[in-house]
Image (cartoon, each protein chain N blue to C red):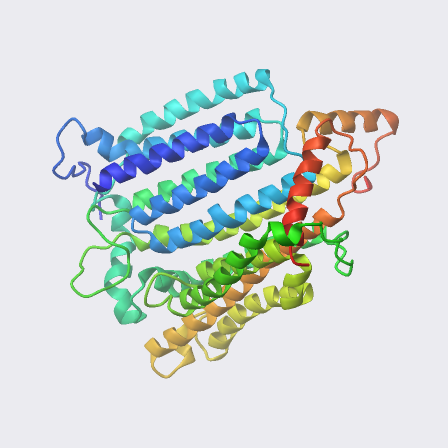
Length: 354
Length: 146
């Protein structure tokens, strides 16, 4: 049964990927990318990777297609094909794929308990983490404590990517511009959307907080909570407009918080350094090493959650603000009709109650 | 410790042994090649980014498949459970997904700026605009091109 599910999900993933590669309409490709994300989240679930499935469901099926659609609203949804290049690419890709498939012959069987990947550090994590860290979710133990350096680096990468988006799109973002006048009938047309969104947002936030603070005992943690929290804000922004969501969390606040998270993480490291242990060695934080680990993990997961949520919300603000600056004059490209249609569609989503 | 050379194929029949034991890897390779194909064949920058995402997800699926142990549950310790999947790939991929969306956003932001500067996100148009610019003005020293 499990095997059948695995085969079916992966086959669906393959079909979706092929249709993404073949389809000419970029908006349809973005939607298929959302389906692709949801399918891979389902696949991770069947593999027992519950923490990963959480994250992929929020990111792959939620935030990623949304950012692509926002980009398409600015850049046009039609693409041009190039038969010559497609042939060349096939000539390159097919032999590489064939060679890789031949190479899988040496791979250990899927699911084998004695494969080399299962022999290295994993037994130590599974057998010792309860004694050394004292929390049931091994993924959180490894993420926050055993591999704390690694996770710190990743949080810094996320922060830096957020800074990069900020510097690319900030110059023309127009924070203080007044709202574009709401479209007529927006009120009545979006009523279902607005009511559903209002009902959904509170449970999403509550769930994000649960995932954040229960991450030591069940599936969850800062990364998952951060993206789920951001999805709540993004939903609000999409339905009620960018100005409404900026009244809840201003652009400056979000920028500030994205740095605060990194600082919390770093200062936990410095604190353990100051008490004579190594950087990010949480056993220095309390007299009992295991409770020190608990304090350290809760603190750095909080830092991770704040940075991830703030960076995701900031990226959404910056992309959504670009839509207002879209020049309505004749575009240089032949696909400007597609652009205008996309913008109008998104703008109508943006306005809502206003 | 030395890795055993002969892999245990649980209790499956000989016909579906290869399918059951290597199917995930084949799909991973197929997805990876579709992503690579999109990056090479498509001239549209957004489509290239979607291709990169597919490539990236194929690596995620590979890692998670490698970490799976037959009959094992999620790596959350509970009484009465002795077999767990490998938690390490989960940690690596969990963070990679969030880093991936942040870098994808950066790539999309660059695409928006390219659209502003060149009026198109098709590689050929950008190249043509560059060539025209080069012919019109003598090349500037590095670091001074707007």
